[in-house]
Length: 204
Image 1 (cartoon, helix red, strand yellow):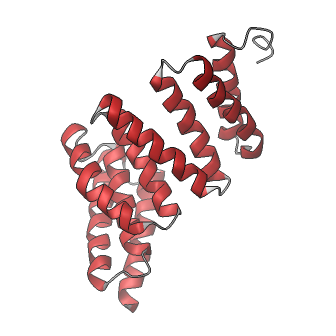
Image 2 (cartoon, one colour):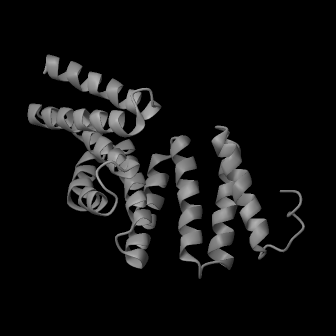
Image 3 (cartoon, helix red, strand yellow):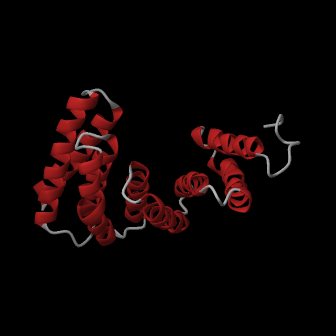
């Protein structure tokens, strides 16, 4: 970062170095230190690189992730909606758009807006992900998982909702075992979540 600090604000390398520094703090779970760097990075991208929509979306995504880690879910959700709508408008249905949608439904679940998660996942994101990326792609699996989370965590869920969540997670576990292996952390996480669903059903 010090190598680029003396460059003009408009210099792309300076902005990239700032972004890398912010993401480095974030990767090391130093979210409070990452936040101001990522905020400045987004501001600079909007000011000097507004013609590069993807650069702005990427900066927004980094900031939204950091806000989410700090528990500022409503702010992360606002950015998530903006990114998804922006990418849909500029890229249409693409891998980057679907990835942004996956991040959005995670934020919706964090904000406990489960009805919106279910509608967005079922009506838009999962059909697009399965068609464009395939059933075994990591983004598709994450979308399936977040739909199951919405069904499971919704305080107004029915037994049928829990049964649907169980079916979804069972399928996710099988696909993760097949694609990533039984010892992969995401496979183990899905198995643990399936155990939680089984326990809830046993008491329903």
